[in-house]
Length: 402
Image (cartoon, rainbow, N blue to C red; front, top):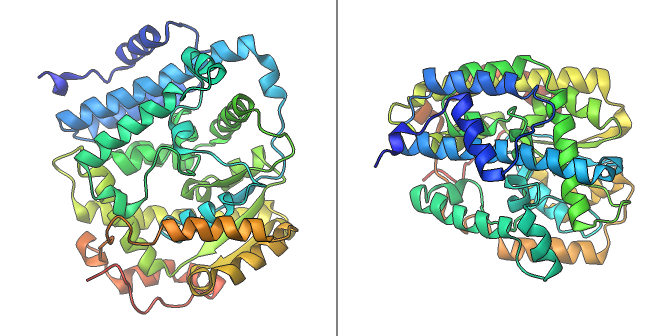
């Protein structure tokens, strides 16, 4: 069918994006630097199969198309950049440590702004989006994501048990960082270790500035009240916490903590399920070592940034075990930190989300460290500094392992 020949070179991707958007100007082209690192890594390391090559190429063209649309939109509507993002609430924690649950509980409080999955993937309105809004019709970007999710779940049905997917669900902003070609999404979906090392070791402040611009676009198109704070969440903020603070110096940061032994097994399983569809040569042992090393680096960097850049008044720690034991009590502590009243309307919204999103709604997520060449002793030895710092209890029983 020819899908294995999908071009992943810079010129071909840019040509496709320009043809789809009907536009030519990218504006600031500094994004080309990380994009070139990514493209080299995809060609030399990812070993993409035909499906993986095609889907990766389609995704890259989408990102480029949105950059073209954004440049055009800001020329016509420069006032978008005048919007302010004040005191966002940011959940900063390892993947699989309860960050999604905490994010969606806070998102159920209508006093916060949040990002929907379809907005994360397609943040810049299409020309047709404006007419759809004027006619009170469904935005074509939403329809596009609904169709895309059906394809994703058909090809990889196990993903739903790892991370719940829905076009209108509250979603993290790592998809916005992807538009700056500086996102962990790439390394969760494809084997790109040199690209992962590049974004880990280079300043990503420009990517976070671009993310903030996309947030302003989303908020402007929705006509959000300017006084509502955003609630944000992404594990990537652990490796880029300094960049996040550079862009949002008044951010209120919530740090959830979970037994790192349990986190690592679940995190490796998440990455495996994200990558295995698109390559036929993925080694679970390589993946285990890669993500353990990455996690160790992220935890160490987060602590350095917390100690040097974030005022104590803007930091709050919460244990996964406490959220699991009594989520209302845990949320009370968080709202005290935020200086907000956990009112009945917020509690009703949170309970409503919990009632329709039980933990194993899409099947149980089964995993073990041994599947990825890791052991409890090795993980404990390398990540014990993190457990000791926050007095994180051992998670004696893992309910996801049969």
